[in-house]
Amino acid sequence: MSPYLRALSAILLREALRFVTQRERFLAALVRPLVWLIVFAAGFRAALGLSITPPYQTYITYEVYIVPGLCAMIQLFNAMQSALSLVYDREMGSMRLLLTAPLPRWWLLFCKLLAGVLVSILQVYAFLGIAYLYGIRLPLMGYVWVLPALLASGLMLGAVGLFLASTIRQLENFAGVMNFVIFPVFFLSTALYPLWRMAESSRLLRDICAFNPFSHAVELIRFALYARLNPDALVWVALTFAIFLALALWGFDPARGIMTRKARP
Amino acid sequence: MIRSTVSTLAMTALLAMPALAQEVWVSNERDNTISIIDVPSMEVVDTIKVGARPRGIMFSHDHKVAYLCASDDSTIQVIDVTTREILHNLPSGENPETFALHPDNRHIYISNEDDNITSVLDVVDRRIVAQIPVGVEPEGKAINRAGTIAITTSETTNMAHWIDTETFEIFQNSLVGSRPRHAEFTSDDKRLFVSAEIGGGLHVFDTETYQELAEIRFEIPDVHPHDVQPVGFKLTEDMSRVYVALGPANRIAVVDAETYEVLGYHLVGRRVWHMAMSDDETKLFTTNGVSGDVTIIDLERQEPVKTVKVGRFPWGAAYRPADS
Image 1 (cartoon, rainbow over the protein chains, first blue to last red):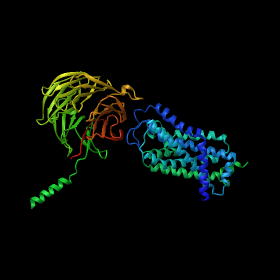
Image 2 (spheres, helix red, strand yellow; image 1 turned 60 degrees about the vertical axis):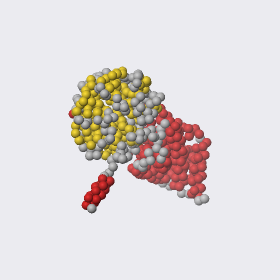
Image 3 (cartoon, each protein chain N blue to C red; image 1 turned 135 degrees about the horizontal axis):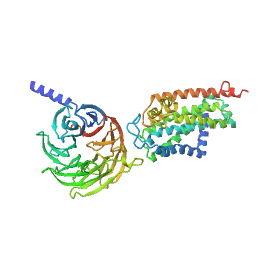
Image 4 (cartoon, chains in turn orange, brown; image 1 turned 180 degrees about the horizontal axis):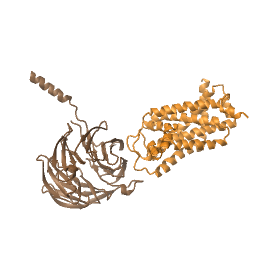
């Protein structure tokens, strides 16, 4: 086995073991979107249906609308969790061990990123399974099409998390960052409300939502769940992934990165 | 030789003519148009200009012409299904809202909403042959398969009037819930269903005893009971199901027509009014008045599959099978 693949399998295995042993983390990842689906969506009182926007072909209830956003939310939290574990690893010293492996730094970070994404995909499928039992049935092919979309959106969010991890030195600072990242990113997106609904309250809010890369991740997942491709969303997601991965690699580079500058007295 | 060539060419031309596909014709009350939906593609393929305030719409039993209530023009328009042109107008009495065609394919029973009258039109002689006084604001119309009984429901009197089609006289009145809108017989003529919009129920009557057999009620989670207003409905040929439009509840109820149990609801557009069903009973087309569209429900999968934009305030819908 090539050293590259060995590193990949080792990192994946470590993440998988962590996923299996931390059942509370898995449950928490599921409970959060389920609370949104069952409690928040029920209280939204859109029982009379939402106006039709692509990819929907007919009227839907709010519960149906919110599902793709909640899939993306699972990935967002998972990405932040992975970033948190990176900061923790760095504090504990295991990060140094990883980064000193005789392989390119970008490959090691990418493996770490991929491992987190695969965990998030498992969580999303578990959520979709529960949503199915709850009565939210999506087209059968949608469950297949959503896999590459989840991979793309997961990589994008993971890259953002990686970048954040590269900028934070202490674990204590992370909670603040999570509040400043997760909540605005989630609420100022199409996860909870369609753009037309945002436009009704404020044009500025609508524009922010339309610009937010998280919205594009949500829309990529939404379209994929209906076996359709949203090319614009895919481009946005790919571009965001590339930018944040480059920034993260730069951030983790001891010669030039943010860490170096922070380490200076 | 020439004759044979001409006949061959004529035959070829005839064969080359595209057979008419299955269509659903939808009357748009505010646009004075009919939207034609091609069933296989589920797209609007044509829009026809018609008279003022089109509401009730149906095809002749041979599906060669369509009849349309142009309410504000006080006429019944006859439209050729092939050319989609208005052939002529027929007398209807004042303000015809909706109607039913007798199995003889000749007599149409029309509700004249403002005059409290049911007019009987002979489409061959093109004249009104009878005018029957009924309750206030007549609306729903139904004729049994045997052609012996015609029903008129009157919105304000809250009654279903049973009319003898031989004598053109009312021989029975049945009290139903508030504002009865639509009536239909089962295919065996043994039961009559009548919807009550404000009353919120679907009433079932025995056609021999005229006694009410059941009142079906609807409850939708998170929807206010005032918004549950049954209007149009369709019974399946095998009498196993009845699909009921619930107005501002934006739902079609699926009801077991034998046990009267409500089996479920389908979300459709705003203020669903009437509907048409394909002859193989695999698709249902609902007119959603306020949202100006038609929702197509796949009855095999029991799920709405598409909503297509039509004109403003679609009212009635009629299904025409493909040419054989």
